[in-house]
Length: 271
Image (cartoon, rainbow, N blue to C red):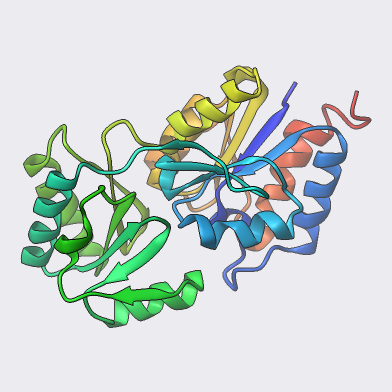
C-alpha cells in the first residue's frame, strides 16, 4: 500500500502556466483523505516551493528542495537535512561556468545571488517569483558553501557543459538537468532519490510504500528508488526507462491519473 507520495513541481504537477489543475487538486485532496502523506520533491529553492505546499495544505511535512540538497519542513521550517557544495569546489565551478559563458545562480541560506541580471536571470526570477541579490563576484559569498549552483543557457551548450564539467569535477560535484536550459550543480551524494529515502525513513516507511512522480533527468533516481515510479508523458527515454508507468502530460492531469491508478483505486476508503 502506498503511504507516501512525492511530486515534482515543474512540468509534472504544475501546468505550463504554473498552476495546479482542478482535477489534480481533487485527486490530491482524496489522497490526503486516505491518510497518505504528500510531499514535494523539486529542484526549486525552498521559498519558491513553500507556496505550493501551502496551496495544497501540506503542513509539517519535510519538503525536498534544491534537488535533495535541502530537506526542510513546511509549516515550521525545521531542517531535516542540508548538504551544501564544498566552498573550494564551488569557487572553481563558478570560474569554469564563466569560462563556458553560462548564466550563474548561486543559492546561499535560501537566497538567490547573481552577478548580473541577464535574460536567463530575468526568466528564472519571473518563473520562480523569488528576489535576487546582485553581487559583483559570486566567489566572495561561498564561505559556508552554497546549497546549489545553477547554470542556465542554450540547451545545446548545457549538454556540452555537463559533459565537460563531469570530466573536470568527477567526484567533487554532481551535475543533473531539471529543464533543458538548466544545469544543476550539487554536492556529491545529493539527488532526489536519496532525499526521498531520508523522508521515507523519517516516517518509518520503505520504498514499497512510496510513489514518486517526475519528468526530468533530475527525477530519475527518485523514480528508480520508489516502489512506484511514474514518469510524465514527454519525459526523456532515460527517465521513462526507470519508471513503472508513464502518465499523461501535465496538460492532461497526469498526476491525477497516477494517483487514481496507484493510490485511490487501490485504497478507496482509506483503510
